[in-house]
Amino acid sequence: MSWIQDNKGPAAVLGLTGVGVIGLGVMLFNAWSGASAAQEEFDMVNTSLSRLKSTALAPTEANLTKKQQIVQEYEAAVGKLSLVLYKLQPEDKPTTNTEFQAKLKTRIAEIKKLGGGKLPAEFNLAFDQYTSELPKSDQVAAELSSYLDAVEEIVKLVLKSGAQSLIMLERSPLTAEKGESEKPRATSKSKAKGAAAKATAPQTVSITERKQVRLAVRADQAALQTLLSSLASPSEMPFFTVARLVRIENESQIGPARLLQASAAPVGTDPSVPAEASAAPAAPASGEAAPTKPGLTPAAPDSQVVLGREYLRAFLEIDLVKFLNPQTAAAAQR
Image (cartoon, rainbow, N blue to C red; front, side, top):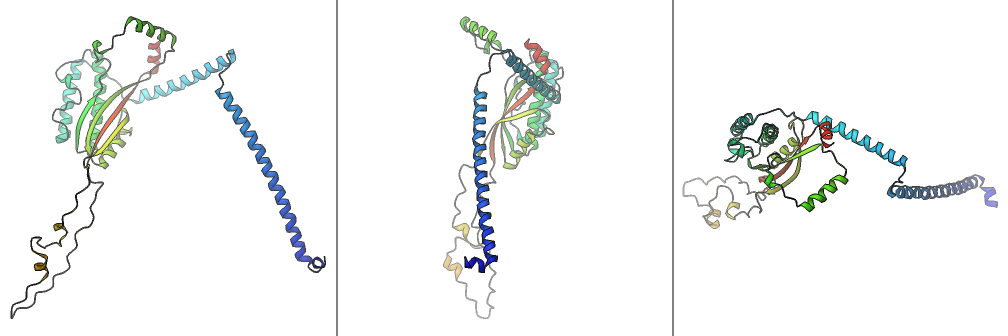
């Protein structure tokens, strides 16, 4: 007690520090207790929400009305988006079968002139059969005409990207091109099951139509990156394309061979001359000046570029997405 009386200043400071520590401990304990209680309450509410989300809706009139309203709002939003995308894509123009064949031959000649030696020898933009025969109808010719425009744009992007060559180009046939014999014949039992399932299943409106273009190119890394970027660029590719599959392999399957010992000799020396003979200089004749010592020659390179300079073979499967008119498609489903 005498120390406190003799040192009132330090004692007051220590006392205030102790009271502050005790008060801070009480505040921390209260905060920890409040956080624990809030965490427990949050876990309870989260568990309740998860249980409610996994529970099936009660079959009441109010729930049915609310669900129908949500579905209608979703269909309206999807229809508005599909209508915008439908207007953004190039428009299909009416074309007769003879006009399409003339257009095809003209485009083939233009692409061959533009491509030079980068295209295969027999190259008809994957429409080989229509160089000698006409489409089945004018409606099929109109669909093939827009299909031809999309394939031509893809080939132009390949040539513009700086690829070394276009090795292969194929396309999937349209539904109208397929013959009836290619469709699988269903038995009467399977037809009955299909009709029953179609009657019970809800009808869905299809707003897209996909066609597939397959191509193989030989290019370096920069050209391949340019091609993929151009396919996704709306300013360079007017059609909607999706690179669904890209498979790349190096042309060089093994690394470079080890350099020969002769190539490691200094520049300007003859590998056939023994090292002892090349190392010992010839003695100058009497009365002749000693030859000047030649300058240092650069050593042979001890490294070589392994990756980055080889060519690539890339196989691409591209989906051409055509957006249908949602109003016409919905009317056709009714």
